[in-house]
Image (cartoon, rainbow, N blue to C red):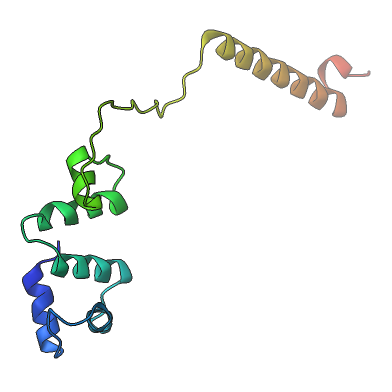
Length: 133
C-alpha cells in the first residue's frame, strides 16, 4: 500500500514538492519507475484528505485487483458522493446445473454415437457383423 510519506520523500529527492502540478509529480514518479496506475494512485494519495486515505486506496485495489464487490460506503468514498443502496442483487450461480432430462439426453446421445462409431469401424475393416468368409 502506498504511503504519503514515501511519495513525499521521492518527490523531495527529485527536487519537486507536494504542491507541484500533477504533470511534474507524474513525470518524477514515472522516472522513479512507477507504473501508470500506481502514479494515479500516488497523486490521489497526495491530494486527498488523510482521514479517508486508507479506505479510498483499499477501495481502488479492490476494484482493479480483485473480484470482490464494493460496499456502499466504499462506493461513496471513491465517487465523492453519497450513495445509498437499498436492495442487494444476488449473484447468479457460477456452476452450471443440469436437470434430469438434459442428463438422460446427453447419455442417450453419447451411447448412440459410440455404437455408430463402432459399427462404422467394423464396416470399414470388415470385422464382426460385416466379416465375409
